[in-house]
Length: 315
Image (cartoon, rainbow, N blue to C red):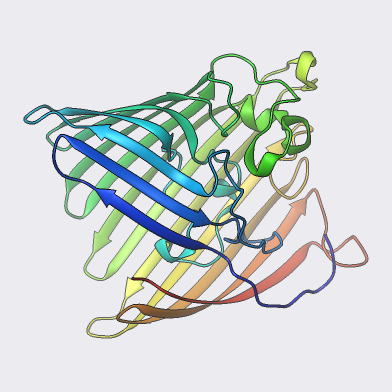
């Protein structure tokens, strides 16, 4: 998986303009991203061409009729899969879990949101994985039990077939990116529990792709992941401590994460400091591969220790 590396680069940058009140609302995110690292994988560099509408990462118009429980959104919409964000400052940790690495991102489509009391239902029909092929359905149910407990169940799946020559994120072909990602069925859920200054967020996720010889999926392939993300804010202090523990396993020839047939676990800790608009944090993570793939110049290492220093300005 390569040799030791160190360096400094721009991970993510975002300018957001939004209007969240009234009948007509909008959200515009001009962004350079792809620099948010996944634990166990190389740290990337910010890229303004990450999606098909780049540098417009997300761009939507929303109609929210007054007094009605629903709203309609269209444009380059964000996905509903998983709680982790493409922008590291929105996460408790610098390194993302393996679950994030197999999830969809922004794509073009139409979104309907319906809210009734503590329940919010979201359905998105669009091109999924930003392919330009409109055959992908996403859905999510969010239930807010109270201020401290929230459950989210999500789904994302292809209703047809997305071909190998289709382009996806960063202009990569589906064939090169992996046809099982765009032609998959994903089910997942996460629960957010807050007690005082502590937040616990467990998540489980399962994704699979059925045999489709026409696009090179000659055998059933799947990936399962489970993670626990934690965040503790020290009272009356600019310091907080994030944490993450994860397990992942895949089968078949799909290169879902690290390598085909990869199985492993990882842990991470992220102390953070924030003063007004400035933040700094350092992450250290450890990932062990039980099967599949290897690290180091020798090509047979099963362990990797990964560190990162992250800083930025939020305004």
